[in-house]
Length: 246
Ligand SMILES: Nc1ncnc2c1ncn2[C@@H]1O[C@H](COP(=O)(O)OP(=O)(O)OP(=O)(O)O)[C@@H](O)[C@H]1O
Image (cartoon, rainbow, N blue to C red; front, side, top):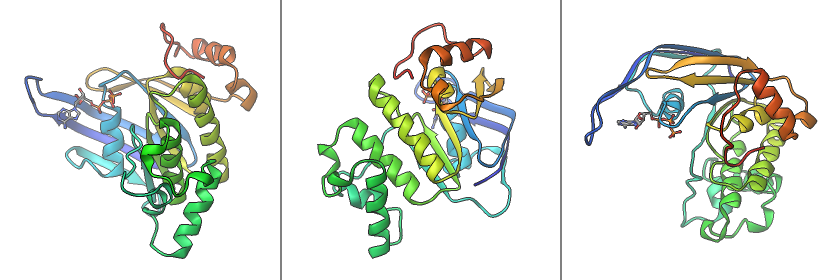
């Protein structure tokens, strides 16, 4: 697990294709405690993916620093789309992130069983539904035993029931394999269903509008009415219904 200190003094994107230059972050600070399940909630286009990319080390074009307590963490990143390699089987897609050899294959097979896909190990991704592909992406993230798990809207575009099943699966996986999680979504009910802490981001440049601890039990997290009540009390309620709601 991993404690993280984020300080982005400046991050801009230059003008492109008619869009003006944009300052995404200016003197932005966020500390994340080890073992926290932190959901970053915010509207589309705000800079949430940019923040994950900076933390992951994929985007180094910013001023500031990301500090990790202790040894550099093992980071897994679940992207918005599952990003499976179509020419590799499901098993190979999961084993890809592990050293080659029998042990890796066995670990990948066990993780596929954990996400309920043992029978599809030898299938190719094109045969899988979007929900199944997202399960493979979860397996690929967890099989490397990450200290820090970055998740960028990993359940977007799923129907309500599939999104709920995947959230239940994610909660179970986190209990089995504890990690610090930074999870991006624009869906406040999804945030309340999963988070130990919700940080709502707003504005350009981005600032923290709300920073709320979530202390709901498993039963409460499964109740849309209870989640809605929590969100209203916390000042996080959305005016409109959102896709993939809890
Ligand atoms: N490489 C780039 N060059 C120029 N602008 C970019 C680039 N990447 C992102 N942007 C712009 O920066 C802003 C933030 O993008 P980002 O993808 O981080 O937002 P987001 O909050 O994750 O949105 P979404 O929920 O839609 O994914 C957007 O306006 C986007 O168009």
